[in-house]
Amino acid sequence: MATTGRPSKPTTLKVLHGDRKDRINSDEPQPSAGEIVPPGWLGAEALEVWEEYAPDLEAKRVLTAWDVEAFANWCDAAARRRDAARHVEEEGAVVESPVFNKNGDISGYRRGKNPWLMALDAADAQARAYGARFGLTPSDRAGLKIPNEGNGKGAERLLS
Image 1 (cartoon, rainbow, N blue to C red):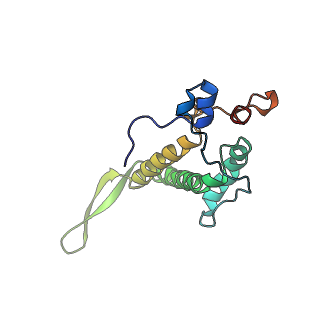
Image 2 (cartoon, rainbow, N blue to C red):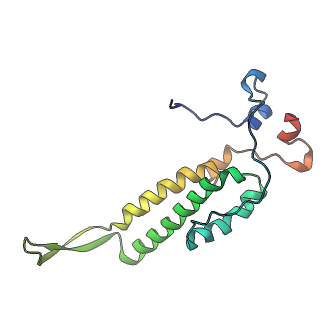
């Protein structure tokens, strides 16, 4: 069954905001602590993206062992987006393509949209969708709250 509307607020935010107890999932599963390693299928460029962002996200507890695949998908989309942008930069947004006659001979050229723009748009959409889950844009970050362990008022204290 598909859900519609706004996504559910994380349990820790519900606790911090003082939501009613019957609306707080006290049995929400939590990922185990463990080493977070990139999956083997990540390409070299996507691995560079992983190494650029993963340490900081892991330190802020946004990236957990359960999030590895989703984050790897974001890294892959970001790498594909960079590659497509590089091609568009080199070739331009408008390119000349050959036009062939019925015999397969080139009969002329036409100008049209660079096919790399479609790859750029697709990778952009995927990067935006996955990146939002990790607060990788300013507007997405505005909706995240990371407990400050130094002041003793973290959500873990409230949940225990």
